[in-house]
Length: 231
Length: 59
Image (cartoon, rainbow over all chains, first blue to last red; front, side):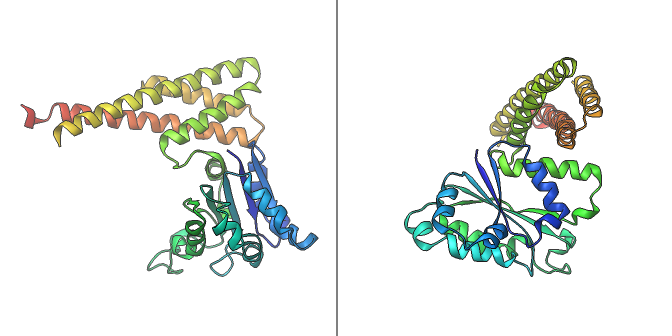
């Protein structure tokens, strides 16, 4: 799985959230971090090079803080420049890739609801990106929303980190079984770098998790069989 | 089964306590969550099998 994160942020270096996400994403192989604003600051964007680069990835992540219910201007500029009609529609260059949205917001997520202070859901507000994914033949992933990062405690940040890494690289949809195999692969990678005694105990735990998952799959099959006989 | 999970959770916590890396700590915490979720789902599936197998409609 190869993933590119296109970050649109006028001040990425000053953002604690983006720093957290950047450090986290560096733990994964096959993930490329690319700041769009840096590309525009250096020179006018090289459209052909950018189009060629995107072709080599399976998952494209658009990552940005919400500005007036949409993305910062740099992402719109990038999409207008790079996603030409010829590239997207005639050549189907993005077809079958995943399109993910990582959105950071300063307000409570609960307010993005009918009857809430913000009135509209994130899914409604992100609709133009979904429409683009549809036109491009991409698989649109459920937007990954990080609300009020500054208020998260350490435990919440740990959970956020793992959820984010899964959003970047786990097989979709993020079912329990897919999350389990992703986590086992990460634990196996970690175990290889641990001192012998810890490595041994982590490997035992990994075996336990795998066995439990097999048993769970068997039980699920049994439940399904019994249900099917009844209904 | 619950005993095995308790043991696994303890092992994960022990390894996590020795980790400096926030990423490793996070993955180990996620593994603890996973182990307890597996246990919960196993118990629910087992209860459903028991419930449906012993349904009075089948008596």
